[in-house]
Amino acid sequence: MAEDEPKPTQLDMPLVLDEDLTKRMRLRVESLKRRGGKRQDGEKLLQLAESVYRVDFIQQQRLQFERWDVLLDKPGKVTITGTSQIWTPDLTNLMTRQLLDPAAIFWLKEDSEAMDWNEADALEFGERLSQLAKIRKVMYFLTTFSEGVEPANLTASVAFSQL
Image 1 (cartoon, helix red, strand yellow):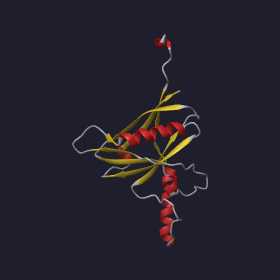
Image 2: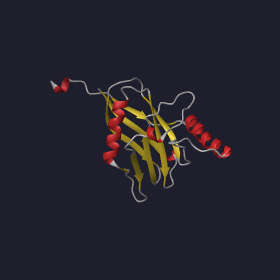
Image 3: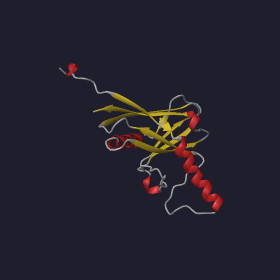
Image 4: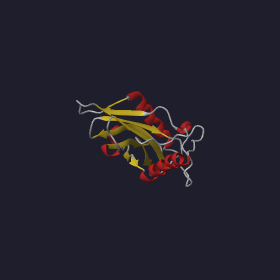
């Protein structure tokens, strides 16, 4: 009988570079520099090696995290940090308290073809995404590039099974 049961549908949701939001967050940094202003207490300013990515959930649904699919086309490191921020049209500033723990860290070594990652943290982070998918239409990620990689070198998605 178990053979007759339908297999859960697998959903592969890509992390997409949100160029507009990244640009707007960089403009905030430039504006502060020009005016000689200071960031708000607790505000997270976007650094040059950081970009904003998003995952669009098709509908609010019950999902079970399956895996991260992260590829770098050259050696380096990428850190993906989820945010609890739901950006509004006025682009409310990102505050450090809105960054979720743990972050998922992926890297490719010079002499390796296989990606490495901090498995326990990445799995825990993936499980949190399953919970957020029940209530979110969009999930934002602060993605930090280091050791020579940049957005053009990254292909990433999160795989879920639909419950």
